[in-house]
Figure 1 (spheres, one colour):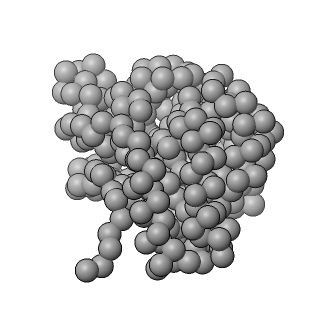
Figure 2 (spheres, rainbow, N blue to C red; figure 1 turned 135 degrees about the horizontal axis):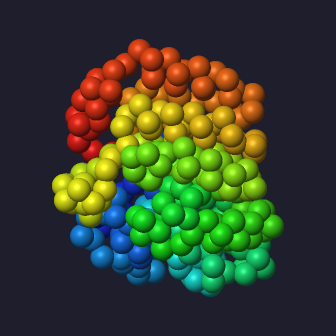
Figure 3 (cartoon, one colour; figure 1 turned 120 degrees about the vertical axis):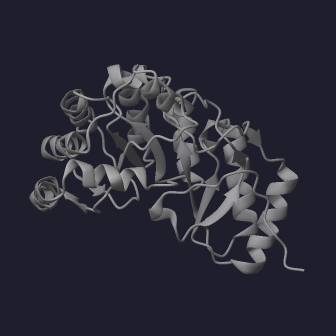
Length: 297
């Protein structure tokens, strides 16, 4: 019988972690209150017992002894204490000693708050790097409206700690999250905030609501009006146009009708031209039909 790894519930990872070896240390999300999110369903947050982690590492050692990258699964494994994250890193090094892999994971902004810069430096020394943070927006009004649990100032404070500790990070931005008529404000404030940071990349998605989400129900009750598809494209172009940091823009997800990627500032105009072409060539209805056909992110 082929041994299997322990996975409880949905498993998500960013596209750029496609070659990383997955390792479950948590399942579900500690917050689980964002109005737009349905990624983890009704799953309750769970920490994996050390026995499960070691069992999985024994299997990984057998099949991937030279793994160069480990991605810890769950919505925000970085919520674990510094000591627990350090213990996990030491376990990984014990079993995957040939590769000395780096370690990535998803994190919430609030997961960083209880860790000092010295704590973060230690975790970086143990291999934690290129973590992924779904900030979704840099606009406090938008973040509060969708119940992210933090505001723009929190993003600035906590991510500056990562910069100081040397931990690199990738961000996700969610176009359309501010609702109809608010896209430009969201983009301008987000661009201003992101430009004060050092993200390796900014992954851009477009809000896609499913019936299980609270925000979908607010749409049905006329409490939230979705931004049009053309407004979303205008919002993304506004963000790209105003970013003043050096970063990769990643727009190759199912939520974007047309994929786009590039490096800011070098490829700024190419990205803008691509999005502008989509804006002028595809009707609002064509773009909406595409979004309505999305069955899963």
